Length: 265
Ligand code: NAI
Ligand code: 15L
Image (cartoon, rainbow, N blue to C red):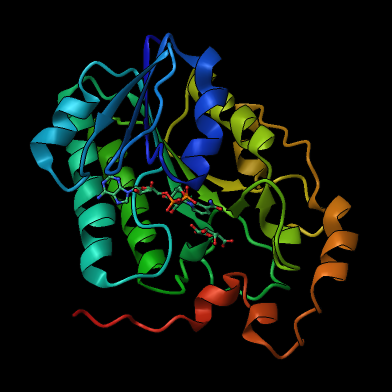
């Protein structure tokens, strides 16, 4: 690729992945609503609110691929979710349609299905069961992407990320964790595949206790190599195991199932 766009580049995952994308494109256009810090030689930085239609159009122009991490990433007031995750998604897809339909990797979330139980093993056809307004916004994003694929042929990887961070932080994350290395190898597969389509991809490493089946995307050749199991001892030492009747231990969405609907001011 000549130019790859990374939204949400100032966030937790964006900051971790930013430097690792160097080999994927000549230029990585990093964007966020907040300051992007020091800009490397292979980068160009654009501060942009995803809710601003014409700014997003300018942001996408000239890009051959998009990794869309930007947005509200936890439960929040609906007005905040609406701007970044609903209007922002619409703006991004309209900009892509107007600018040659670059392939998109959309950071969806396990919170689209958070109300499944942890003893259930899901494939990509499991009906959505979001665990909050944040999860609902990711369901919207997946549906929007699907519509742009059916109507216009816009390709998107709908990556239902589990917990992508340096290492798992709870017993639940021994199932949901995805390492940065595995995310990077997924990104490479998504952008190198001759044909992508619009598949759901479960974003977790090769964890012994994972809950999700990715066999429908074997054509992408993604083989996650890490396994959260090596952190089990560390987690057992750091915290007590949640009680089996605690919703955190029952539902795949973990603590998100307990979040309230946050009131507007
Ligand atoms: P984060 O909250 O650290 O980063 C999100 C970034 O989006 C922030 O830098 C924020 O400033 C930016 N942003 C928010 N509103 C914006 C707006 N209106 N316009 C432009 N930028 C805006 O979240 P994190 O952990 O880095 O996650 C990245 C993406 O991956 C999010 O979309 C999140 O929903 C998704 N995800 C992450 C998971 C994880 O384990 N890190 C798990 C599942 C999904
Ligand atoms: C998410 O969707 C969140 O963005 C992230 O902060 C994590 O909490 C993750 O899910 C998770 O479920 O662990």
